[in-house]
Amino acid sequence: MFRSARLKLTAWYLFVIMLVTISFSTVVYVSVARATQHALVTQWGRMERQFSGYGGPRGVPMFDAETLNEVRQRTLWVLIGINSAVLVISGTLGYLLAGKTLKPIEDMVGKQKRFISNAAHEIKTPLTAMKTNLEVTLRDKDLTVADSRKAFTSTIEEVDKLSKFTNRLLQQSKYQNGLAHYTADIDLEKLLQKVVERLKPLADKKSQTFEVRDGKALVKGDRDELSELFTNLIENAVKYSETGQTIKILLSVEKSCVLFMVEDSGKGINKEDLSHIFEPFYRADKSRTDSGNEGYGLGLAISKEIVHRHKGHISVESVRDKGSKFIVRLPKPPHSA
Ligand code: ADP
Image (tube, protein in one colour):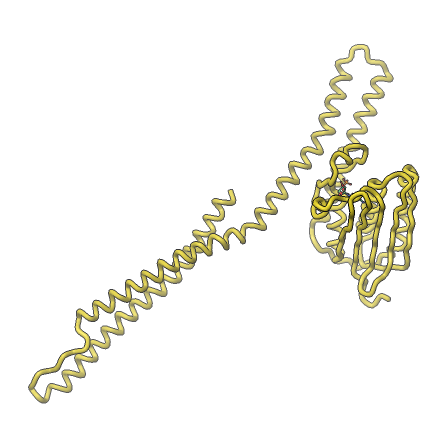
């Protein structure tokens, strides 16, 4: 599809360039023909005047009709040569340029295709589980009330998964709208305390402790989005750390920005995965996520969009089996301390 689009775009580039050069060449050719014709006529006139009184020979003209034709022919060949060179050079350059022009669109379409296929896969899994569950229950002639309760509970779990997933998808598409203009001042210290309080039971389940160092920090932003950002990063630290480990959370104000950092000493991320983990549906270690750590690979993609909407920057430092550090920098509101 993109190959034919590239060829079509190249043809359009060539059409425009050749239209210009051929028009220009025509003008040059006509001008040269006219100029030589004019020179010939002027020369004959001058000679007529010079020799009309003497009655002798009129001399030899510098230009005659043959020379004029030769000049025209040469001009024509030079112009054909130039136009052929322009055709070849601009064809090659046009093809390269068309490739460059279409590359971002090709990448975007590829990303969208992957997104749709991943989303469809995530939806298909719980749907299949639900269908199997219901079919088995329906076929069982000796079904007890306890059995049917079990089957329904399991179906509801799958429905919950589906609804959680669609909510994540909606968030992802909502936040993809690019930069936003925020006017509200958000007290990040208070917001962080709430998020930490809400996630404490999750950490308690794994006997993990939060070591929080925070201070007064204001940013212009959206409370729900920033709460989502803090939640995603802290939840991941809990999810990907071992039992009993400590998770360090830092909120501080720097010279020109507000710094938020979550550091764990968990499993870490492989070097080759680091550049991909902010892509939707990317999971660094599928076997690990399959073995207990549920997730769709959307949390970091959503976090990145939120940071981007707040004109901030998110980065990660991680060493396999040593731990990870997620660093978020958000711009300080103007005139704040
Ligand atoms: P998921 O729902 O799978 O956690 P995320 O987008 O939040 O999706 O994260 C993407 C992947 O990045 C995860 O599957 C995991 O492999 C890796 N990851 C994220 N945070 C951490 C962390 N703190 N420690 C180790 N790996 C992490």
